[in-house]
Amino acid sequence: EAGVAQSPRYKIIEKRQSVAFWCNPISGHATLYWYQQILGQGPKLLIQFQNNGVVDDSQLPKDRFSAERLKGVDSTLKIQPAKLEDSAVYLCASSLLLQNEQYFGPGTRLTVT
Amino acid sequence: QQQVKQSPQSLIVQKGGISIINCAYENTAFDYFPWYQQFPGKGPALLIAIRPDVSEKKEGRFTISFNKSAKQFSLHIMDSQPGDSATYFCAASKISNTGKLIFGQGTTLQVKP
Image (cartoon, rainbow over all chains, first blue to last red; front, side):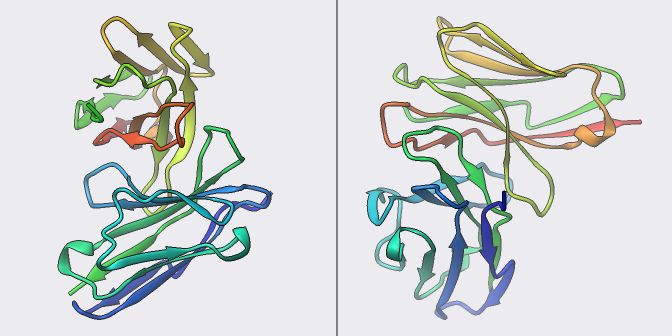
């Protein structure tokens, strides 16, 4: 069974530029999560989807971050405009509906200069 | 009340020794407590998890001990091996909720040969 796929793996941008990350969850997983992991810290949930709908986006900085999950499968997370403090690893995870076990992708390391 | 506090921040153990990592939580509504293992450049991988209806769960060399009254849980790695060198995160969530995981700050484990 293929794991969670993410791309790109690395991205370097200047502040005020925009960037987008892509995630393909494990096949059949209805729930998809985006986490932000700042160096030296644990992951922090940004947004959670259940199929197409948003379940929790309470910690998403909505003035600059947006996410969508079209057709309940792939998802994209966008940052526009980026700030220096957005430098982090962005992790995508997925799980079966109503199951607790979350499976993480390798992440995208974003550096904002 | 949403915090999960993890200690120590870093740990060095000799090969064959026991590694112990501790976590404490505040929200008594939490009822799912997983441990994740993360290698550099990889996403977190689920290692073992426990629900509060049991005080201990063992899988191979990994054991979770859970103390509901103290609101603490710990990970024990028996016969630690150099391949166990990684960052370990505890987490907590409410099963009946959205499944949002609250992560600890992480413990970097180094097992010396």
